[in-house]
Image (cartoon, rainbow, N blue to C red):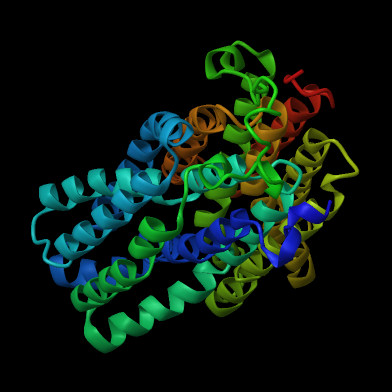
Length: 415
């Protein structure tokens, strides 16, 4: 176990340098390319006169492009590593942020966000998880925990930072400032620090020194091929669980504040209590990692999804401030664990070699759910003229997702 962190002779495993670097760059990438978007909506609407539907529609397009691109991105990382791809993604992001800061026409705006979809696919968790998985086996849980805990503060850091920049500089110059930030941090970090896999540095996974060529036996197969994984019924149960879980998570995230305001709470209370979700995301990742070695991962996923369903039920039947707080705590716990659980389960079930392709294919369903959820829930609300049946339906969806996860059982597909 000593090789999970330090190596002999006072040296340290370079995998932790990779994981630590990605923890920082993922925080910046999520903050700039994903969370900051919402801060620009109102100032863009005021200056350009575009409707909220037009503005947010471009973001949905980016999510769809990201999802469609994810399997191809995953295959690239499996074969070539994440260094070139993630560096190119950061560079493209810088260019598109600068172009966005000068946008005047809706078609150009949408074209930029098609490109931004490629940035999301090459800069966020999917390639980062694939890189980390290539460097760790026994230490994977701790490495992913490091990555997701630090990146879990992206919204906490970048929402107020972006709002401050917009207030001080205007939205156009704020975008330029964010582009400069990515250019001087994320881009060089990816280009200079990331490496393809441990063997490139004469190491084995988790940090053991690579054996001499004369002593090395035949290479072990470290994972299931992507095509074989797609024929595994368990993969489609996973896809179902994560699609339904992500749909509910994103839909609630977008519509929770309007629901609370329509339920009689003040806008201040609604915004403050919703902020608890971010704190609970980090806490839940720690708890999930602590129990991950004791319980089967799919059981933990089923529990997380069931808690999401319970949270929505509490929100519907306990219309008191305490009930809302309890519901939000449960929602945050589930939301934080979902991304970590996806990487952990795919790595555990299908191995390292084709992790990027398999996880990327799963990301296609996750990104599709994220893109569809705000609009789908909004249309359902318009049809029902109430959020209660919408949230009840989402509670049922997360319960079905929990049952799908539970159906996987505890035996991994990789043998």
